[in-house]
Image (cartoon, rainbow, N blue to C red):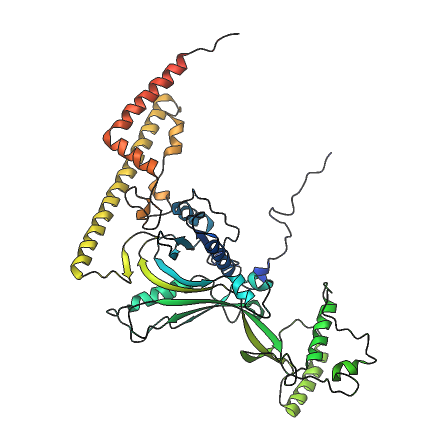
Length: 482
């Protein structure tokens, strides 16, 4: 008898390797996830498409890196999939008719939405081209970057300022929620390999502008206090122990002794230190790191002897051997952006405007807008109640018909068209027929609006009768025998 196959790769009980994110302390189902989208993918141009790709690299690993947009895709399609996929943030790139590049940061599923105009930007390839020693793409993108925010809040701001205090607060919260929080006690130091710097420019004229500079860096470290030959030997030792041995090993074929390599020749004139080396490491800061690498487990007696020797050495030398001094340098990865906030909306690309840079309303106009939004809310609530009543009525009719006919359903095909409003994942004005998206080229479907108008005018009932008559006529025709 054949042996039953047991799937061991994708099913329960499979011994799959632990992901890198889990080992680095960042894998969690509650971590924020994002989608970087081009609205009007064929109209934004190649530069904006490359900029969206670079921003996806910045948002890794919690983003859809290989997302493919189509011209037919609407913003509603992406928002609808946010719930099933667990997406919490949408970054939308678009280009207006006047040629301005816009970026919208929307928090799914209920907003708010922050509208930015991209005043200037540089792609990642341009940043690398300008560097002498660019940083290549390695393991930096396996973990989220460290978010650093500067000057986002003004201590002198209040509710009546041109940039009110509550706007600074919600903007800070929105950007902080882009990446998972870092726990200093649990997050390994080696897992922090990138830095995302958001610096707010303070306007000297206090004109009410909110400008953010976007920078992305890689963190590189190097040991301090060793000469260049010694650093090369240290790197070679690590390379020999690893599986990959491509390059990096010093060439000692023309030397008689290792001492010639260390002192730089027979007379020692080529000896290089951190001070005399021609490639002195330009550092941004120097830090001390406690060595927490894995060590061989020893017996209690051996550990006690080693501890006694280390304590005696510390008393004599005055330093700890486990503490390593390393130089830290930031290498820019790109892209660069200069973002100017223009508008903040209450919902996801729709809803009440909370703040606008150029349009300022009086108190009377604000009260009128509040009345309009309250009227819209009431109409929406009435439509929801009516829809729920219709669904319950249809369910009751089907149950009565099933009871009268002995279990036969009235029309099983109608079940596909039913929608219970309580099970619908989103509650937003953008799902109403008359409330469309307030953005470039994001209006509702014209066919849907035409069907709604026909239903209101009573023309759809006549078409339904004609369709029923045609179906009945086709059902009476018998197939010809050959």
